[in-house]
Image (tube, rainbow, N blue to C red; front, top):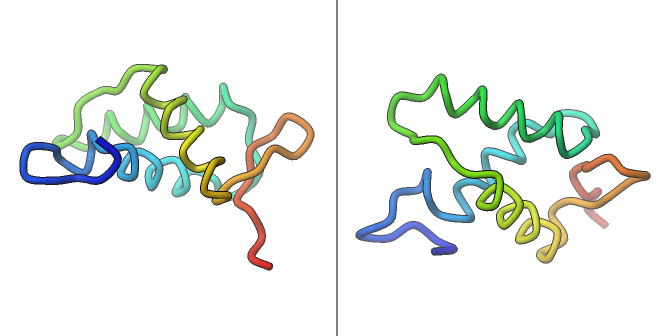
Length: 82
């Protein structure tokens, strides 16, 4: 579920969805804008299927838990390496 495996493609694994989220964070964005950008990017890929908002939030929570992203006054941004 977190990592892709034999029966789970990278487009369905939380880490894979997290990578797609990180790719859309070229600047701080609010959750709604980020959700729309991830949905549009996935729609362009023929190999990936749509994800639910719940799955998106789960991946967002995973990224926050591993300190890959942070909340900056309501905007999600990539955490600066320390």
